[in-house]
Amino acid sequence: MVVVNDNLWTLLEEVKDPEIPVLSVIDLGVVRDIKVDNNKIEVVITPTYSGCPAMNTIESDIRELLENEGFQNIHITTVLSPAWTTDWLTEIGKQKLEKYGIAPPREKSSDKKGLMGEHPLVICPQCKSENTELVSQFGSTACKAHYKCKDCLEPFDYFKCL
Amino acid sequence: MSTKEALFDYVIRQADNCLILGQRLGEWCGHGPVLEQDIAMTNIALDLIGQSRSLYQYAADVEGKGKTEDDLAYLRDVWQFKNLLLVEQPNQDFAYTIARQFYFDNFNFLFYQALTESADEQLKAIAQKSLKEVRYHVKWSSDWILRLGDGTDESHERINRAITDLWSYTGEFFNNNEVDNAMIDAKIGTDLTGLKPKWEQKIGSILEEATLEVPAGEWMQSGGKEGKHSEHLGYILADLQFLQRAYPGAKW
Ligand SMILES: [Zn+2]
Image (cartoon, rainbow over all chains, first blue to last red; front, side, top):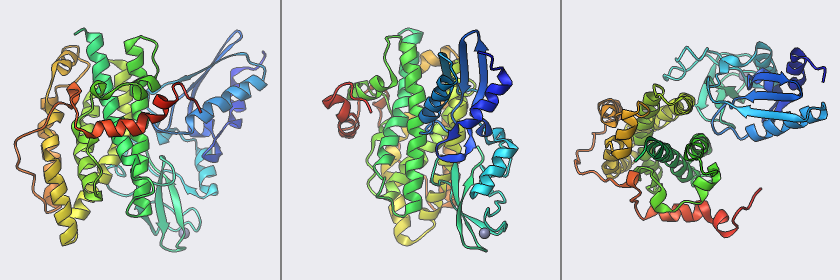
């Protein structure tokens, strides 16, 4: 077992969010820590939303990847604190989202405007127009809101701030 | 009652609130008035069921009898459920569903907010996580109160009937029982009576904006937190627990 920690973070880039397959669990900020002690490896993960149905798949995908890398003593721990926030999405992750057709979160979660009812400025991922409108705070998955572009008329998902 | 027993009951109560309301909202799946709202209700249901899972897991740990979250959700009977009576009330029409959600979300927000100060680390972590999700629920149900109240004559009449009919189930939010008192003493729980003025102020201002009046009834239902439920819970559990009862230990 000669894999050092930095390599493990790169390795786990291979595990994707099953619902948004362009994003890795590293881009998402779901992997909080990786600890290696002799033959034991522990990966600490945190759910995006409490009810995120992707967590079970993510856990088994991480396990399978590590098994294929030769690890035997694999522990995957789920923690709730500190609570996941969209601030942990990496810049690369945000770019990948936009390219994929999902508008990335615009605000910091410390800026509660979106939560307090003021809508953030959401840019259409198709035509880059700022002339967009919220259809519903709840979209195709727990982490997304549903928007519509008033210029190109396409509907799109917005990865909402949490 | 030991602190451990009280903690178990306290965590179970909130887990049951989330599970039962989640199950009720899930009944709308495929039946929502429009697609976006069907999705909204099932998303909220998913958040609540997710919260119930964290709480059940923790309750099972606290109890220390080797049970799992599934044992607690699927293998307890009506009298062992400690949820508030409000959350088990039937969906009826969209207005009733919104009224139930509006009352509960505003309470749930204040309750989780109070638990973010809990001396119990796990409960605090669950509350911090859940609070972020509940903000969106409050926004959704409040927006619908405004739209229905300040909408057409028919929507106004129907939401008015719903908020009035469900009013008597809101008193139970703010009663401290033996379990609450033990949790307050242990600095784990919160004094529910202290949440009441904030809740009244919040719902009062939204109802006013929605051209509705705060219902005047003073007689309040109670019993859910002690396991005394309305007839509805048995039917919910019959549906929810059928598979594990008929095929014990069945797995995906
Ligand atoms: Zn556009």
